[in-house]
Length: 87
Image (tube, rainbow, N blue to C red):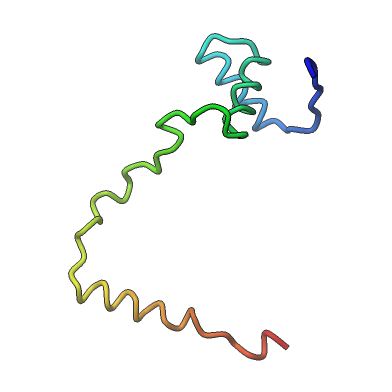
């Protein structure tokens, strides 16, 4: 198939396509194909798209064992199911 029409992708996707096309100086069709191929796993994702960022880097390894235990204990009530909600 050499041609495919895609409808209903919305303004956010259009904006992202246009940004990619402008940034890489390619056509909208080439930008769409690049994103489709990435999404299909046929092209690697750029490193910046795979990274989750460094917003939490300061916290890595910063908790004491006691703080980690307290945190886990604070989460325990979230593991309990309210039987009335499952009737």
